[in-house]
Image (cartoon, rainbow, N blue to C red):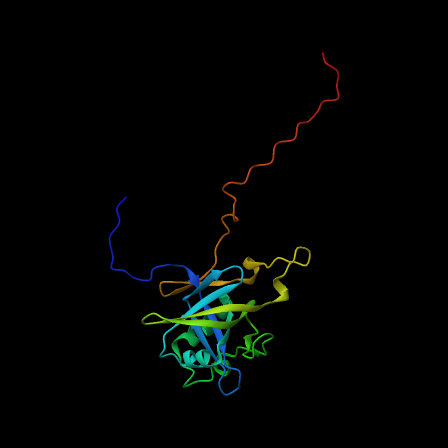
Length: 201
């Protein structure tokens, strides 16, 4: 099996197709679609988003040092794409997409009511890298749609939520679950022995 060498590029796929909401005032609140995002620390809970400085949301997040990362679903695909190709300088993205701004709990910017999981964040640092700057943020709250929470276990149903991913210019619904963390080394339970009740011949 052979591989063809390409020039260096950002080919880490799939990634989330997330909607970032920002702006604490009705006149400044906006939405931006972000694929360059991920977890960077568990304790304290931290994540990052990378944004081109030319984007309208860049200045809003830089000035207020807060944002909410909203996970998206297959049903939100059109709105998610639209928010990525249109600018908040020209459109009220909330009105144009029909998405619902809901007041934040731990931050003053709204979250997306249609999102199954909204992650409220406060920016701790901005790293200037090149085409994009990285906003390193601490998670200050997670808002989960109760429709996808198992009432017995409290677990969030990722499959039922219909989360969407982004890969090299395309949006994709998540597919079949292949396993769970640690399944490759999990020991199978020993078979129970069945004891007979009859007498020996």
